[in-house]
Length: 191
Image (cartoon, rainbow, N blue to C red; front, side):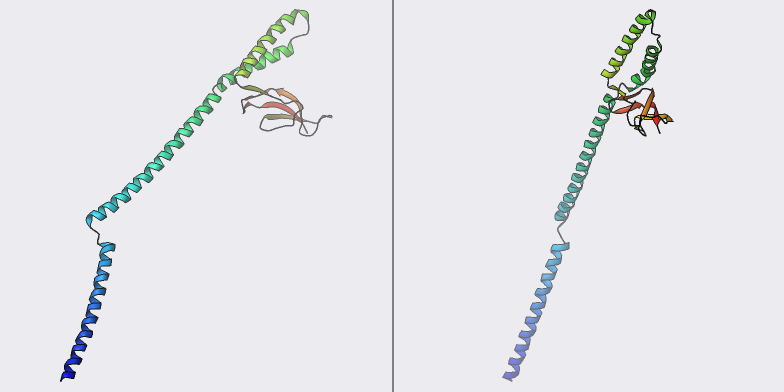
């Protein structure tokens, strides 16, 4: 009977040890679950607020970048406007400049018209100088290679002494305001 009692005690000890191990495993698993999903409301609120703060910081950085871009574009636009502010005035004065040039070219070569020609020449030079001070440039044409960005071909001829695509004659002067063509030169181009 003693043997039976010993074996039953051993069985009870084994069963108790197994049960203890199972309980410990279950407790560990429950604690892990608590750490992962069952945080206190304060901890959950802290995490939510941290996430929200991160979102607001991202928005603030994007807004700052947008503001910087708007400022940069506004500055560039203002500089561009200042650079070309005289364009309308210059464009309206170009026909006047052309007429002065035509008057000088058409004046007969005699003594009576010398003083008139000299006066018109002076006005033409002063007007041209004033416009050049604002950034007006005359586009060179005769003898140059045709450039569709600066010249407008109105005639094509075959002239000896000129290469193909070379400008033979300028029919109307072209002008640039700083680096922008405001009126292309009208030209005859060699074929």
